[in-house]
Image (cartoon, rainbow, N blue to C red; front, top):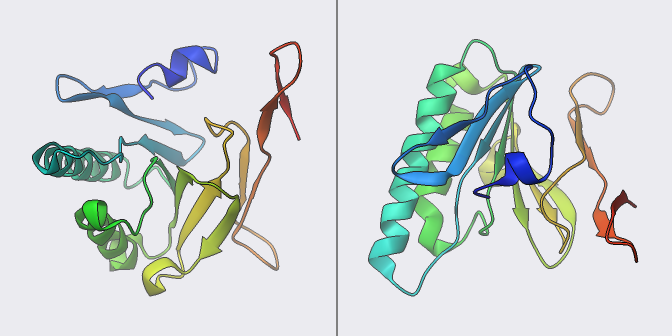
Length: 173
């Protein structure tokens, strides 16, 4: 996700994309209309030490950004790649679930979005009613997600998969 903001959308004056400079330049964060987007590199490696270091960097980045935007964000949308319940990234999962269950963040919706072989959304991850996992099929990156926070069935996360047509243009299903 190193160049996701320059490859898939136009730069804008409405928000500033921050990077975890010098540590994990692929990790990013920005606040847009009270939704905090945080991108973390959650892939695992055969080198356990490298994976452990990456997970620790991701935890630091996540905590740094939710602390920075705590009063300005109602929704925290975390984009990863790895399976949230993978053993290798369990420390990140623990921090995420502990944060969502804390009194300070209990009224916020957290969505962890990742690439998967299938698509769908699961709510109440780790027993937390405000944590959902969005699984997106082979279409990546995630380009069209809507989170409805009000109404009878709220919260509801809606998304459309992105596919490439014969002319290599991005279109939505």
